[in-house]
Image (cartoon, rainbow over the protein chains, first blue to last red):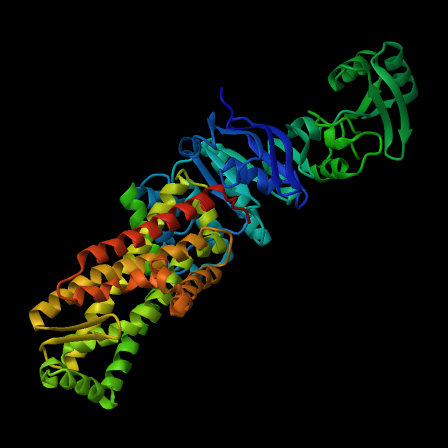
Length: 321
Length: 278
C-alpha cells in the first residue's frame, strides 16, 4: 500500500544554511506520526516541503504516491493542514473563511459546512467576524478548515501552541477522535512531548536538519535493556537463569533486582522458567521510558558516535528508570 | 473553479475597509476641488481663457468641463496611490498575515492563485476609475449646467465639444484611464510577489512612477519619452482631440499592455520560486 507521506533523500538549503539534510521519512497510512525536534531542527521546513510551500533543494516528496513538486493538485487533494498560528481573514466571518479556504480544494455544500462547524463546536458563532474569536475558537476554526475537504491526511505544525491546558486537552481528544472515527492519518509536529506521547503511534526525531530516529513508539517506550526482576530467592533464581542461558548478567541496585536477558529472550520466557523452576515470582517488568526521556537521550551529545549520521530504527540506549 | 476562486478574491478584497479608502478620498477631493473651482479665481481664469479664444464662457463652463478638470490631477496623483496600495497588498499582505501559507497548503497551483488575484485587483482598479468618473461628473452636475465641453491641458489637449460629443469622449477616456489604473496596480502587484512588506511594494511602484515623471521633466529625456510610462498614461486626454489620433492611442495602449504582461510574468516567476515559511 502507498504510504501517506514519503520523503526520499530530501535536502533543503537556505543560502549557506542547511535546514534539512538528506531526510528520508515514511508516514504509513493510518498512523499518528509525531515529528519531533528542537526549534530550528527542520520540522517546519520538512512540513513546508510536504505541503509544496518550500521547494526542496534535492530529493523527492510524495503524498499518497503523488510528487508534490510536479503533481501538486493531486498530491494535496486529500490533505488538510493546520499551522502553529492559524491565520484567517479577520474582517470576514468564520463561515466565509471556511468557504474561501475549502474552495481551493473543492466547493463544499452548506450541509457539509454545518456538519464540520458542529463537529468542532463552532455552531452559533459562524457568522461572527473572526477578529471576535478567542484563541481556542481560532484553533477550532483551523481544524474545521482542515477537515472540510474530507482529508485522508492531516498535517499539523505545532497545533497546540498558545492553547491553555484545557485547550490542549480538547485538541488532543479531537485528534484522537479523528484518528479513531474517521481513520485519518495524522502527522503532528510539536514540542509538547507529553501530548505527543499520548497521541503518536510512530515518531521521528530531527536534530540539526537530520533524522536521528524513526520508528514505532510502542517499541521505544518498552525499551530494550535491563528488566526489573524480583524473585525469591533472588540469587538462586538468577543463577538458574544464567545457567540455562536465558540471562547474560544480573544485579541489584537501589530500585531492586535486574537482569539483562540473552538476545531474543522475552520477559515471558523468563517468567515461565522461574515459575516452572519453583521460585516465587514477585515482579517482572520491562521499565517504560517516557517520550521526554527518550527524546532527551537522543538530543544529548554522544561522544561515542556521530549521531548525525546515525539513523536508527529503535534506540539501544538503556531506559531511564 | 476559476470563477469560484475569483469570487473568493473579490470577497477578500472588497471585504476590507482599506479597499474603500480610494473611493472615499476621491469623493472628498472632488468636492474640495469643486468648492475651490466655484469660489476662487479658478473659474474666472478659465472663463477668460475661453473668451480669449473666442468662445462664450457660459456655454462651456459645464459639468463635463469641470469633471475633466477634476480628473486630471486625481488621475495623476490619487489614482496611482490607491491602486498601488491595493496592488501592493494583493500578495504581500496575505504572505505577511499568514493566510497565503494556508492557501498554499491546498491543491491550487501558484499560477492560478496569482491569476485570480491579479484579476480581482484589475477589477478593483477598473471599478475605481468608473466610480471616479461617475462621481466627478455627478458632483460637477450639482453645481454646473449640462452644456458644451471644454478641455484644456497645457501642451496636451485643447478641445471644444458639444455636450453629446463631450459625453461620448468622456466615456471613451475612461477605457484608457482604466488601462492606466490597471498598469499601476500591476506594478505594485509585481513587487508584492517578492518577499517584501506590502508598504514596500506600494512605495516601489509609486517610486517607479515618480522617477518616470522626474525623468520626463528633464529636457534631455524628451527624445526618450516613449520609454516612460506617464507619456502613455496621458493618452486618455488624446481622445478629446479632433480627429482622435487612434494610431497614437493604440501604440500607447500596446505599450501599457506590454508593461502589464511583463509585470505579471516577472511577478509570477518570483512567486513561483519563493519558499513560504513562517
